[in-house]
Every structure is written in C-alpha cells, then in structure tokens.
Amino acid sequence: QVQLAESGGGLVQPGGSLRLSCAVSGTIFRINDMSWYRQTPGKERELVASITAGGRTKYADSLEDRFDISRHNGKNTVYLQMNNLEPEDTAIYYCRAQVVTSWHAATTTYWGQGTRVTVSS
Image (cartoon, rainbow, N blue to C red; front, side):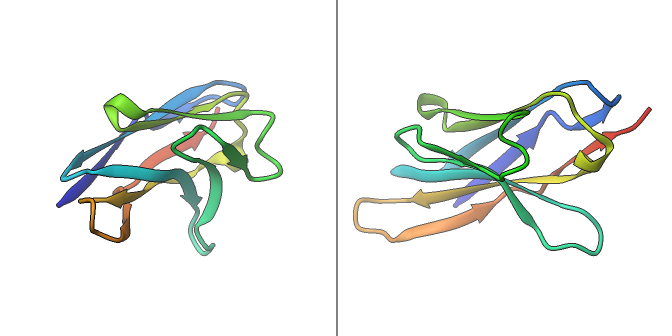
C-alpha cells in the first residue's frame, strides 16, 4: 500500500508565499513522475506542475514564473514553492505520484487527500 501525505496549505495574503510538501510512503520500488494539481468548486482538476525522477519539470503556462516544483528522491517527497500568490490561486492542491511497488509491478497512480490554499486579504 502507498500513501501520500500533503502539508503546507493555509491562508496567505495576496503577494505572499507558501511551500507545499507531499511525502510518499509505503511499499515503494521506484517513483516516476510526481505532480501537483489543483481544483476549485465546479471546475475540473488541473495540472499545476510535474517533475520526472530525473528532475525534468513542466508547468501550466500561466504559473511557471511564480511556482517552482522540486523533489527529494531520497525522501520520496515533492515540493511546490508558490510565490506572489493571487486570489485566483485559491484551490485545493493535490499531489499525485506514479509509483512502482516492485521490480515486476506496473506503474500505479496515487493521489493525496488534498491541502487547501486560500489567498485572501
């Protein structure tokens, strides 16, 4: 079994910063891509950023200049540094990891429970 535990969400004023963390635990042979998504009521979950095991990153077009995704492979953890936050960034942020649990297993996608980010004065 694999679990994803997110932390770091909260209330921040416009222009402020937050750093989200997501730690993956359980039966892990390898973690491939790790990603952050976000969702607001009535909208589909959207990709914020992703990072491969080798460190290659991808961002939503409008976020690359303010957000930074990174990972610590030794800790099975992915981070999202969010700067100059705007009210439009308010959402529930979800971590996703593509995990291989043994040498002969297929890749399985796991999701965290979400952490709420609220940007408001």
